[in-house]
Image (cartoon, rainbow, N blue to C red; front, side, top):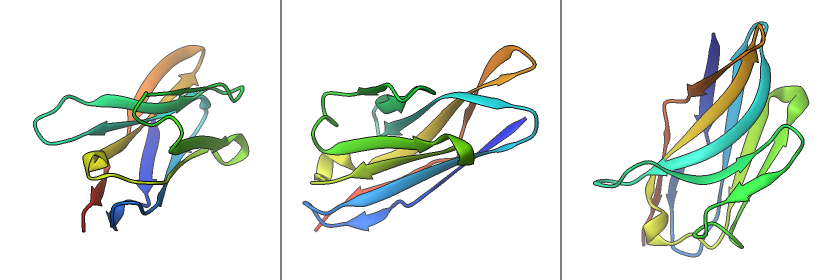
Length: 119
């Protein structure tokens, strides 16, 4: 099993910044992809950004130019720097980890971290 733990959420004013962290832990696994998703009230969960093992990234249009995803493979950790935050960025942000265990791929989710953008 792989445990996923997010941190770094909170309350910030419009135009402010936050940095989310996601750590995958466990035994005998290899992280492939890591990604951030978010779910606002009354909305479906949506992809914000993802990063592959080799460093390739993918961003939602709403995140392009404002958010930056990165990862430290040695620490099985992903980060999401969020700048110029807007009220519509308010949501619970979830980290998804795709990991290989004994040649099979699995996906694991964190519990979520609340981000609130409000004055």
